[in-house]
Image (cartoon, rainbow, N blue to C red; front, side, top):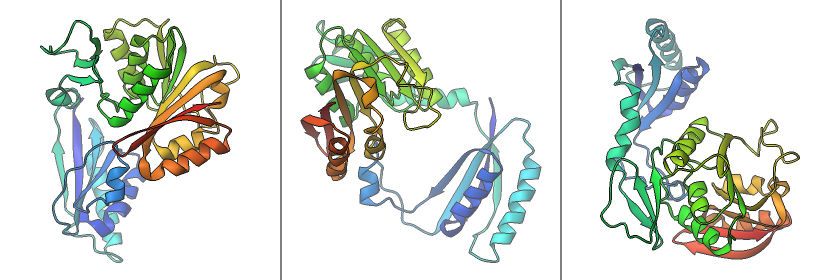
Length: 317
């Protein structure tokens, strides 16, 4: 599908107001570009390394992406009127609007493959893009093939390593695993190769479920071994119902501290009586916050593991 990129040149002062205005019109993919540097704390709380950017000059670009057939002239008039209105109160910069067609979005979806290379987790697990080969694979390696990482997760992050290490340590052959926030399904798939009899993964993002299913398929894993569905345990309207769903030997959540804290109140109904809750995605600055939430909700912490600035807890219900 061909999209049109609609961009407003403005200021950092006005970027949020213009962004909110575009959101109110239900356009797709509102994006802000500026040179305001992230704080050290913001960088640490992210899952990716953020390169340093140029000096903040006060300018910004606010963009959105419009599908074929969209009334671009109508949008231009609405945005122009809004910029004029805002200019009476704040500096909106040039307010120039630019419009440019983009390439087919299928091209965007394949660009990341150029940069995704095989790598090793621990000594015996290889993450292998399905479109390449690697001379360093050993006969004793467990090879996990990856077709799609359009949702978060190649398996390279420290928090994934932490979770895998604890699954390797605690999982018994044939046990079941519930992967909350499965992303691209990497952790779920590796769990099956480590001996899990059945794995269920959920994620709030439908694209994550699609990626997970594609990755499970290229690894030859049938639905009786691994399944994925959209779900959100923190939502009152969650499709995941603890009263009807199976309980699991191990529940794993590799997310973020701000999600794990409320999740610690919701997860126990999905755990077997002697089940384990393995959770990571926790920056060390939030370690005590998560620990307190787990203990408050009746968990006994049996293992705490660190890797660089990240923390993993293993708990019993």
